[in-house]
Length: 155
Image (tube, rainbow, N blue to C red; front, side, top):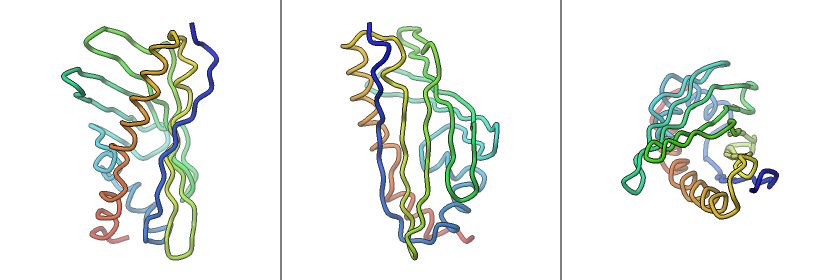
């Protein structure tokens, strides 16, 4: 059983807009949901987060709450998954953080997912989970889509 492996998945990109603009766009109603492909994402302290994912013919429900928002700096939310096809619910939530770094006329946006190695699954399943989420966040955190959203949305 693998219950203490610390793993952090990180995906990031530079968005060619000022940090305040990127923050305002992402924290407007529904924009985070559109960017990450979530069914629901309430960008406020305590807000609900819901993903309903169909992947390789299997359904996954992931849910959580926004646990922290630091104005124009970070959004942190809990993330827990139910694998519908196996009826497996993670024993505890993991943590996803979206951070914003001011780079003058652009913004560094980084998404990190921590805690996948601490869910108590065996090594083989943990490795599959880590690889799956490494691939999934690269697909879901579509930075080209975020650039397009920032270009068409006013402050």
